[in-house]
Length: 201
Ligand code: ATP
Ligand code: MG
Image (tube, rainbow, N blue to C red; front, side, top):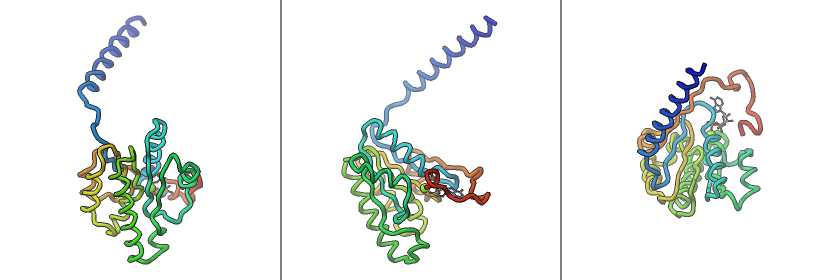
């Protein structure tokens, strides 16, 4: 018994030393990161808002721009509206494409939203900017993906940006510091269960 305990202790000491050495070899990021959440599984937006919650905990300045979901009532939007001094929230003017069914109007709304995004990214006022569902707008070719990539990379050094949405374009995957692909293993929707308040929106 004592042997096992001794061995465990020795292993843990070694592990701790290894871990310390690894951390020491890394440097603190001198600028904000470009993070990308994509894939077919659930969690892209919730992970972005989870990060936002962390940033708020440290008193960071944060802003959110929701592309695509303009007219939808969502829990996060209701929450942000209650704390305008904590979170700057902007939404793209129009709702889903199948609600507007008007490509020209969608493009105009996307362009306006991109102008606001650039202002958020360049101002130097924010530690974190979330551009929720921007990938969807790019997928629909409402904005030029090279222009968006350049804009993201030209952001103020203070600012970390999180871009979410399925089907991230290759150029953003290439340019991002972090790419997480949410993998759909199971989703209740496939068992006929409707999206739920407080969980899905
Ligand atoms: P969430 O906002 O829950 O983190 P998400 O951002 O990863 O989801 P979106 O593509 O933005 O995913 O879809 C938003 C809505 O669609 C949510 O209500 C979510 O539960 C639902 N959803 C996400 N993935 C799937 C899926 N694989 N099948 C069906 N519905 C899904
Ligand atoms: Mg989402």
